[in-house]
Image 1: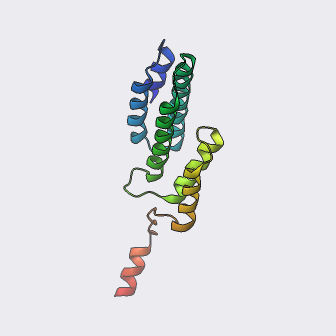
Image 2: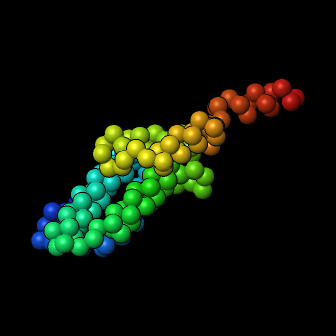
Image 3: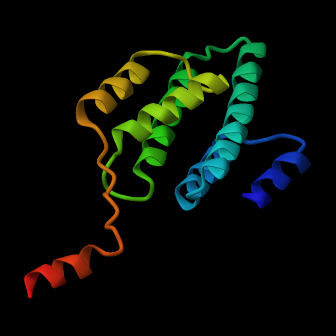
Length: 142
């Protein structure tokens, strides 16, 4: 991630597609929330500039904005999976709220879906086993 940020700082121009691919690759490798937020900040900065550049050139930005929205939602889902195969609805809701508060996402139907999922489905995160669970089980079984 440090290499990405250094490259972005040194670059005279940034290729938003290449940068998006690098961010997506790194996003799947990190597990720490602060690293996810740093990558999302970088993504937001690069994509905001890409939209501005298109608009300044008089080009339609709708398709790019839709792609950016899809990526933001995908990143939120990926983070809520925490490297596993199952989405944790409360985590997704919390992540979406964090992103809305940070201004990287807007409150919309995706946020409402995340909120409803958290309320209805609850957490799918594995429940940690207490340290003495096995000992208690073995002691009562003898």
